Amino acid sequence: MKIICIGRNYAEHAKEMNAAVPTEPVFFLKPDTALIKDNQPFYYPDFSKEIHHEVELVLKISKAGKNIEQEFAHKYYEEIGIGIDFTARDIQAKCKEKGLPWEKAKAFDGSAPVGSFINKKELPASIGFHLNVNGKTVQKGNTKDLLFSFDAVVAYVSKFFTLKTGDLIYTGTPEGVGPVAIGDRLEAYLEEQKLLSFEIR
Image 1 (spheres, rainbow, N blue to C red):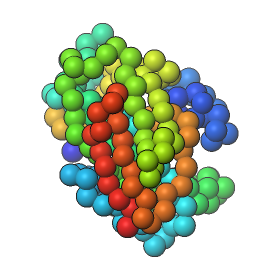
Image 2 (image 1 turned 90 degrees about the vertical axis):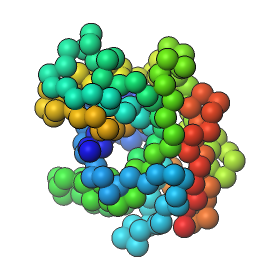
Image 3 (image 1 turned 180 degrees about the vertical axis):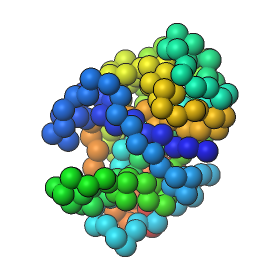
Image 4 (image 1 turned 180 degrees about the horizontal axis):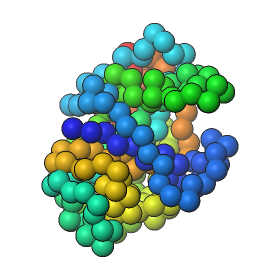
């Protein structure tokens, strides 16, 4: 299975990162070893001193597809969940300075915790979500603010990669990203349902 992550899909997040707002979806991949399931803890890696949280809604691909037309893209995912795209911001900055790829800042083991999933039929047209760290809301987003909709993202990515059942698409983070520390408790909510809760160790 693949983990496909969409970058800069909320304008305010692009601004806080001093990055240009994209004119087409930007994406990168994480390996399956990045996944953390079942609310297992995230272990702070020794190669970074600046791990940031990025809460994102996650699509679970339900059937294989290639070159999917946007009008049919909704047929390729049935469930939506929530996850964290952990980023080693210090490593990312060094890679950017040198013009190098920055997978090691994004795709390291454990960098993609994912929570439970909900059938999309049970969700409103505009989906709200938020992340609490130690009980305080630090990120809050809504799909009405997406630069590229779920269907647009599925269609675009499928031009380059065949999507397979079980693939996950992290759809982008809203503004408010920030550092985590050992001992923190992260809780992610889709609407008002807590779907992910884990500790930093």
